[in-house]
Length: 142
Image (tube, rainbow, N blue to C red; front, top):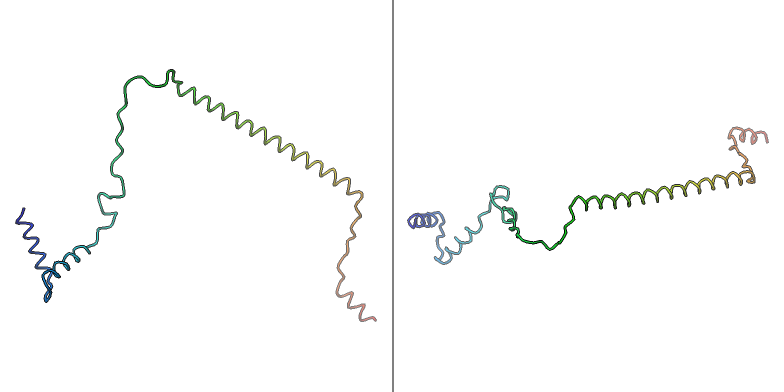
């Protein structure tokens, strides 16, 4: 194993050449070039740091007495919730019917008032726009 690391280090030294610079500058430049390698795209990685790879571990259940002396079965609770929802929806439906009835009564009152006022309102005369040819004939006759 140490021989393999030594061979890789020698290969890196052979591939990266900095002529005319000090050994310290060469090592800094090598480190810079090694740090500039791009990481593969996130899609090609098998594991990602920002994605949880494991499911949460379930905690063991405690065996013993529960704090609730007489637990109510879930079916009774769900039935109570359904009944509450039915009552609430029924109340909303009743309120909607009342509003619709009120709107209907107001509409009928408006229609009755319009019928009463229609007899008193003056009739609008229908005025036809003057025909330009008749106007031209009148001007020519004068």
